[in-house]
Image 1 (tube, helix red, strand yellow):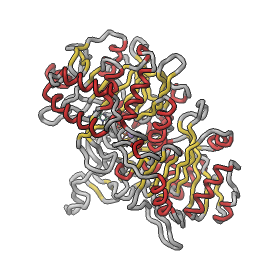
Image 2: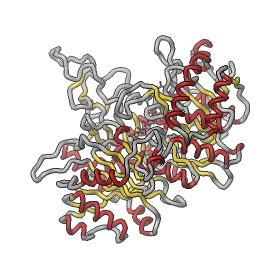
Image 3: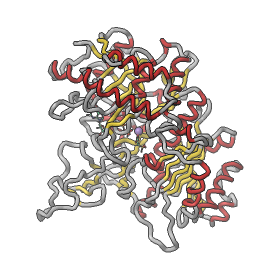
Image 4: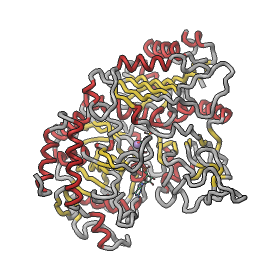
Length: 622
Ligand code: GTP
Ligand code: SPV
Ligand code: MN
């Protein structure tokens, strides 16, 4: 490891920095002069560095080494730091209108003044790490480089898993490629002699993007989406602004490769809101014979038009930061195989007595005793051996937003094309949400424009991936509500423009799916997971024109008998209920969509207002 354990003034004096790039050195010196760390370390992503930092974090009590998995660790966070903080997330564009109605905004100069106050001395007693990284392949035509400065070792080791971290990024910066400045602090300085806590953070949190400057300032949180700045802050909020300017798309989407029994290959991208099934679909094991799924990405897709006029997708990430609860051998065996190999970091899951991890949904029955995500004894009954009620009684052993962080290269079904900087041509885009009612299992849009309308009006129940209430239906356009780096109406217009500029035959076909519809007893109408391959099969057959569909007011749904339900064990009534388009339920949806467009304001493109108008007419309104 390039550990430069020299006094700060000397470090600022450029001793030991693995670069002489003036802009990079000047920025590091400027941040160090403000934040006053005890020392500066340049991270290089080596195995030796991983070993040194994990040892250091074990000694500090931040992580525990897992006896049951190779080179794997468990971190338990502060209970105030478990998820993205949308109410503390800002798009600080120069002009307030550019942030739009769906983002928090503050004048960039004022925000910088406030945050400079918070950053002043905020790294005292700590080490400042300079973390050079690349989102997507290094050999991209324009590699998407960044440097994160952080005072969190947990962030450095997580960034090693999630990004291409290393000196190659510095070489490209030195060669004159553009790069994003990403500043992060836990906001937990230490006085001389002050003991550290296991999970330092600050009650005050700011997650701030400056889109014009392509800069990120984050303060107060160590949690994934708030602190691993290459992920949501760069690859979605900043990248979406880049994509608008440059004519491409930066989206909250998985990327998968589907091979049919006839060896036909299709690449599919799918946008579902946080904790709504992207990782599971990306890694699924099809239940229908002869179909094969391979993974390219589970959270983010960057899509650009290729020379042949098709839309090509690249996954900018290098790791998986997946929701732990619900992940098990029955639901997502490929995720289990990925983490079995080790080299993984788990956050806020439970610890078993034999030094392994456990979470709700991993196995049918929990182990007899666990340490829960808050470090407390936990038993299935909520009672200790003497029959006394435990403090953990009645709460889940793992936090609902607990996560596994693991190298994507360990995924046993990773597609070879994963590392291709050109990406893969997308045949179909799926939008999906978590809705108990109203939204059918699958609907195909008539054309790109109606597909954009489906995406723009996507709704879903909130999940534990962000702080705040869970289970509340909200609009989450293209699953990007918390991630659009500019005005949402302009973002819709950009989607429309992307379609207008393209050859309609070559554009991906757009579908809307819902795995989460419930029956009258509250149970899922559709078994989901590997059985979703049946829906993928219908989608592929729609692409080649062989599957039948019926037209409904909201789009095309599978005709009776068109969905392969062979061996599924559902009744005809159950399948009908999963596919049903209820005019009453959709009539109730219309005012919500109107309110949503009203909320976004004038920038909603007229084409989408036209789509709404024709939907109303088809529903007999208007
Ligand atoms: P983020 O990483 O937050 O963006 O989430 P994600 O979209 O990747 O969601 P993920 O695949 O991790 O799934 C979230 C939760 O939904 C997990 O608890 C899954 O078990 C559950 N889930 C995923 N797919 C299905 C499905 O088809 N049916 C049902 N019922 N649950 C599912
Ligand atoms: C999400 O919340 O959509 C995630 C996890 O994928 S985070 O990186 O925290 O954003
Ligand atoms: Mn996500």
